[in-house]
Image (cartoon, rainbow, N blue to C red; front, side, top):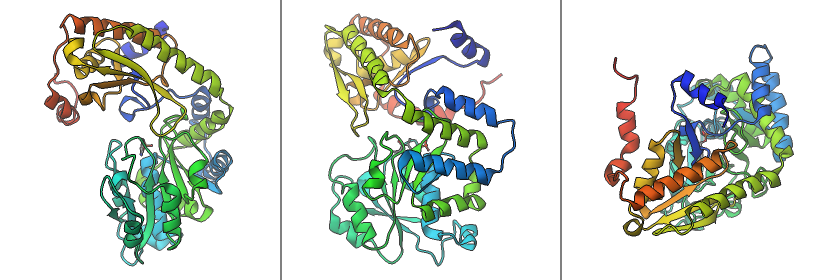
Length: 403
Ligand SMILES: *Cc1c(COP(=O)(O)O)cnc(C)c1O
């Protein structure tokens, strides 16, 4: 890694971080592609007619997704709120002004229980933020078609469908059927596909609007991308004169998201995949033969074209738990942040899609060091309950250091 790399962190007073966790908001999302950085920088000192810029962006989203229209929002989460608002108000400016008061509007949203996940905030809150009421259908692990049919009433404004590794991946009604059941009653379907690489499939399966994050796989600036039916997208855009104002997207994010979308279609997917595979193989070779550690390469659970490196840790043989290892990697310099959401099952994953040159090697070396220290029983044990509460603890102590 270049010395420039380290200089940034020192000057900013921030800890250097190597991200093998994935596109995480808590780590700054993704590595922005050069096209997005240039486009954002070019527009920042200039004035534009924002309505015109939004319309150009709409055309770029339509081109990239095959949708009739598109709208750039502050984030996918904001996009969920604004799409739901659009489904409730339509193009009625008086209604738009009245939100989140929804009196006299269809204001209920159908959501399968297993889809009500937390991506850093509760999914249903993004719906409720518009003033809508959520009708959770079925149970977390089983949703029947008749339950969806029964939940749709005269007051139903939309159905929301979530595609994500965060949702329950069995026992839910698939999008094609969910959309058929909603459409049979004239109810539009909004799909949260924030982290999904597939820019066409959800629209083809019946979505009226789909939401993506610009700052995840696309490598854009922080923004959301709504793609869908012209009337619904326009009604979402119109929310900028209402509740959308507090979720305003800037010109730099619109220009950057447009550039990232254009760059996406031109990227060398095979070369990226080959680089990622090389990192995975390097990590597998690095830990090969470590007692108590089983290494494998696993496919993405929602079929994104992405594999991850996984180790299953048997703490009694490895000399430390998966949690102890994750904490040790995060405590080093640079901090190495890995995927630890299944650490209490002894599972750790390393995601190769946000690596800078030289970092795959660095991660391999640090992983070996951590495993060697584990074998010598030198790792600090992590209290599992404290770890479970770590986000709350970090919030409670956040702030400038005391003088
Ligand atoms: C990341 C994510 C979001 C939030 O996206 P933002 O653009 O960061 O607001 C919403 N839903 C799912 C499933 C996600 O993975």
